[in-house]
Image 1 (cartoon, rainbow, N blue to C red):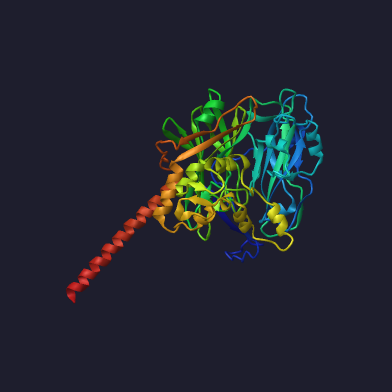
Image 2: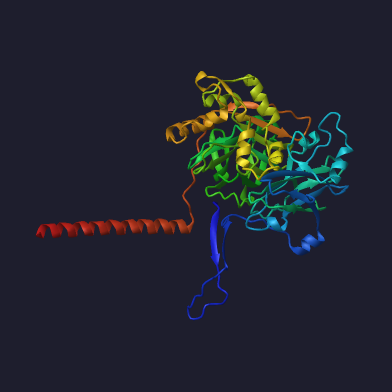
Length: 535
C-alpha cells in the first residue's frame, strides 16, 4: 500500500453539548502504512526470559556544524557465543537529536565483516579497530582497506522507521564456531542541513535467542549502483531510474528452490516520489513485491509482506524509482548525500545465501554516448570506465578534504562542493568538436531539459538500453563476473480491480455525481431552449 499522511489534533477537554474547543498546539501529522501486516514484537516476558540484547552503537561521534553530510563507520565485536544463535529482531537506539521531527540520523546499516578477505591482512587489527571510535566510511585515505569486506547487511533502519522483528520461522544467524561472523561494521549516515553541533551515540539494539528457528535468514541490497552515472535532470515532475538484479546473479547464487522474501525496505533521498520492487519471470512481470506511489523519504519503515514471495534462479528483481526535481536548476546525481540520490531495496529473505548485494548501472561508455560524448582529454574511455568501476566518486561523502578546507572560512554550500568534486566535472570533452573544452557536467547543464520530448527520449534510452549488473558475494570462493545486458522485455503486471469497499463507494459516488451532473446539464439546456423559444 502507498504511504498515507495522517493529520491529527485533539482538545484538552471532552466536548460538552457539541461545543468543540480549539485544539491549540495539540496537533500534528505523520506518515503511516494503513494496510498490510505489521511486525509482531515479542512480549516483555519473552524479551526478558528468552531473549538477549546486544547494543551496537557508535561512540561519541562529533558532528560539527559545518558537516552537512557524514557517513561514519564503527567496527564492533559480536558477543562470544559457542553455539549458533538467531537474531529475531532489532530496534534503533537514537540520541535526543535524532528522535525529533528533524532527526540528525538519516539511516543506519549493520554489516557482517569477513576478516580474511585480503592477502597480508593482520587479523589482530580488528580488535584494535573495535577499541577505536571509528572512521569516515568509504574514504581511500581514512578507511582501512579491510573494512571493504564488511558488505553483508544484517540490520537496516531509515528515518521514521521503528525497526524489524522477523516471522517466527526465521532468524539471522549469529555466533557459533562454524563460520559465524566475529566482527561487524555499523554505518551511520548523518544529515545535518541545520548546522547542528552534536555528540552522537546512535545505533541498534539487536534481539537474539539461543532457540534456533527453522530457517537461517539473510539480508541483501539491490538497486542502482551508487555513482555519478545515476542522473536525474532538473525541472522534472517524474523521472525514472531502475536498478536490475538479473539472471547472472540469481542464476549463479540462488538455490534451485529459490529464496523467499519476507520483507523489504525502499530507500531514496529527498527527490524520491514513487518506488517499487518488481519481479519478472519468463517474460512476464509478477505482482509487485513492494510498491509505494506516495513515497515519503522521511518514513522509511520496512514493509513486511502479507505473503512471502519466492525468487527463482533466472528471475529479475527490478528496483524502480521515480523522482521529482521541479525547482532544481542542475541535474541531480547519484551519491551518498541527501542532496544526491539513491534507488535501493533492502530485502530480508531465507534461506540465507552468500549474497550481499545485486546492483546495476548504465555502462560507462553507453552513458556518455547517450549524451553525444565519445572522448575526453588525457584519458581514453577504458580509463574513464576504470575510474568509475574501481575508484568510485572522487567525493563519495562528506567531510572530505574540500569540506575540511572550507571549514576555515565559513559554512559552505554542500551542493556546490558535490558538483565541483564530481568526476563528471573533471572530465573535459575532446570529441565531438562542438562540445570540446567543456566539462561533461557543464555539458549536462546546457542540455534542453525543459523540452519534454528530449527528456523522455533520454529517459527511455537509459531505461531500456544496456545495464551492467554486479553480484556482490560474501564467500571468497564464489566469483560472479559483471554482465552487460539489455533491459528485459516483459509483459507488465496490471493490478486487478480493488475489492476495497472504500473504492467501490468512491466509484459509486463518482458515477452518481456524474449522472447528477448530466441531469443538471440537460435541465439547464432544456430551460435555455424554452426561454429562447418565448423571447
